[in-house]
Length: 233
Image (cartoon, rainbow, N blue to C red; front, side, top):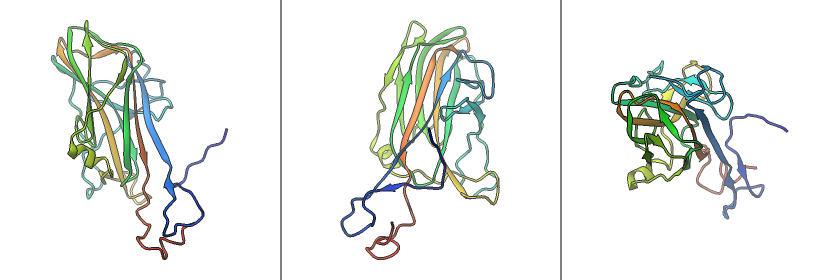
């Protein structure tokens, strides 16, 4: 097994970018597996966060993560306020950080085992996907609520024309919180699970798997067949 990280993007094809463009981008994926029964906190496999707290996983033990308010010109970046649990609505979710101008290809919203809530009655549930907390900029998956549970399965994403336009390139959402370190800007994709009902419908069991598949686009490539376009190796 081998692994490495570098700034990217990855281009594959013939050795040169010439007039016949047969070089393509590598597809990348980020996501998280969430287990609503996992209560061990930061660094716990499947940790689901809690009231007002989203997680980031990338398929390693989940950690609490900051969802930022999109504000590319502001330093330090401004954390978003995640709505706390109430008697009728609860929010849980995952935030993914990715390179600016990445082309989003698709999203996966999967439930492995039924999601059930701690008390009261769950009447509806959706996963909103956007570049901010509870945003629908990229699409919405409506989850099926049956007998107070969100039923296992893969949920389809429906898109408007505006959403399909938005996923062509991720925006510059927040400045690098570490300061004068590359890269200066990040994009974010936020999966927000919104549960509504009565009796504070907070998930306490079940699994949610979310993934975003994307291509990191090279914004430095020129548009002609001469340098810096035609001489990329």
